[in-house]
Length: 351
Image (cartoon, rainbow, N blue to C red; front, top):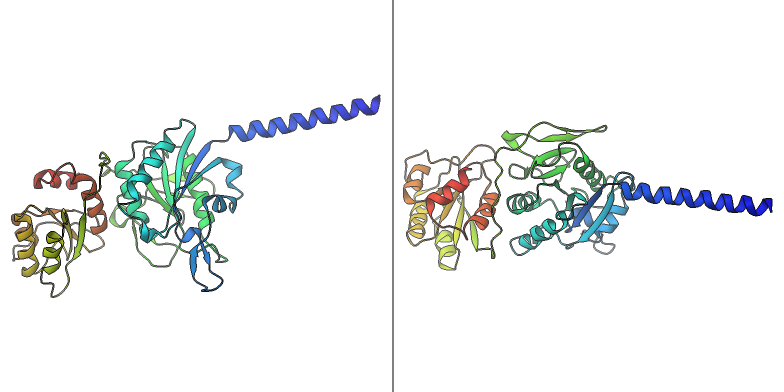
């Protein structure tokens, strides 16, 4: 009788322990992870010895045991492609999926796993189009999962810590790698392989994921949101280069580009041949947005020589300010379906 009593008591205590553990797990905050692919999800192919897509979002989460100590993770497998494959054909669906996930009141925020080549572009597209004010953090890796010092796991854990930190909401979409938190609008990739590749130039970082806590230093004052269009227009990106004859600008307009972003020199300058081509296509109703390929500073209509920014402004060009050419194109993708009028477009770029 005493042995049976002891057995029942131990079983009861075990049950209480299990219930307690389950209750503890249920009390953990919920974070969504949306996997899209990229180097973070790649391993070396045994035949080619080159990195290829290999890991799912579930695999990546499982590789970071500390995640389960701070949050309940819900993984959505959106895609598993190199980020070079990401673009206007995938961005709207990703934006809708993330908004759908964040609509769940139990979800604190979302981590989007992504390759670094276009990570800043996807982040900016989401920042412009997401309706939720919950934190969304894009992370990737410069080293694939086969490397002994792969940076993906720490970046993933830091993103979760950022989402759970006080003050994380209302910052917009961020890119957080190597502990540094960057605003989507301002961040850009600056090195092909170094883990310290993303920074925000003149604007500076938003904060830092430190060992003991997350420190936020500022908010981005240049954020804006726009309705997600029903379709993505075709917008071409053409570079100014020494000796450019304007043929690429004309070709883009003749083959169906609905707007053209020109990657210019300096404050937004180019040669006379490019000026003439731009003036021609603007006269035919194709908006042209002038951005600068210079890392810091703004594209401004300053110089008065033919091809200088001032003459391009008089020809009807829109100036992208401090947006990179890639991001100027993204803003145009979302704004153009609503308006092609120069003053209205310029007002959007000036915000």
